[in-house]
Image (cartoon, rainbow, N blue to C red; front, top):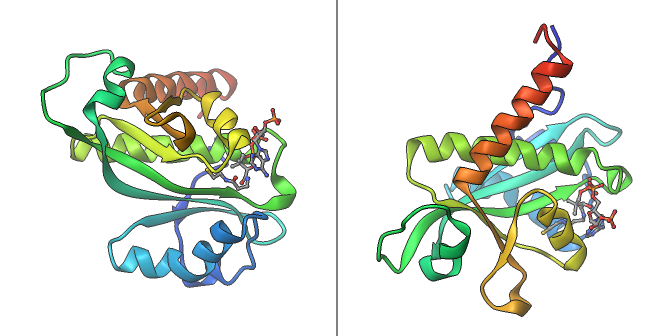
Length: 184
Ligand SMILES: CC(C)(COP(=O)(O)OP(=O)(O)OC[C@H]1O[C@@H](n2cnc3c(N)ncnc32)[C@H](O)[C@@H]1OP(=O)(O)O)[C@@H](O)C(=O)NCCC(=O)NCCS
């Protein structure tokens, strides 16, 4: 039976000692120094995609947060309450091992995993969508390809995708996977 080859798991001490590097020193330092510690302190949970030459192909960190209702109103296909802010999931960190970047493979699979996990969280506690702060225009273009839109101040590079849209895209991806792997 074909298995989804990009399953991500909670980071361990061994993972953070693997020498993972994305080329971004802040993301690499966070992974090495804070990924496990912040998880234990309930500040943010980091998940890794294992494999590849360094043992870790990429990671992402999820944190519970909130967005300003007015910032996302136009992006959510439903009536929203009058609350000033709504619960949402922050994709706080996201990085792919340097040698594996730009291949259209690990980044998209890792993002799909992060969004799939966000759906699981939204099934347990209300989350209107997923948001993040893109590092630069290149990263923002990457997220745009997967349904994220810019929100907030133009220079802030903050991005959001509604949970409704995430659910639809995950469902479509699952159907596609089953078409290619009918025995899965
Ligand atoms: C951004 C990133 C997660 C994308 O993953 P990936 O596996 O390289 O994804 P893809 O190959 O599908 O996408 C490539 C696109 O991502 C962007 N990208 C690629 N390398 C990048 C890099 N080093 N920094 C920023 N963006 C990058 C570009 O928009 C590129 O599009 P292009 O081919 O049209 O120029 C990955 O490149 C990475 O980890 N970069 C360094 C860390 C980083 O910027 N993380 C995002 C924090 S918000």
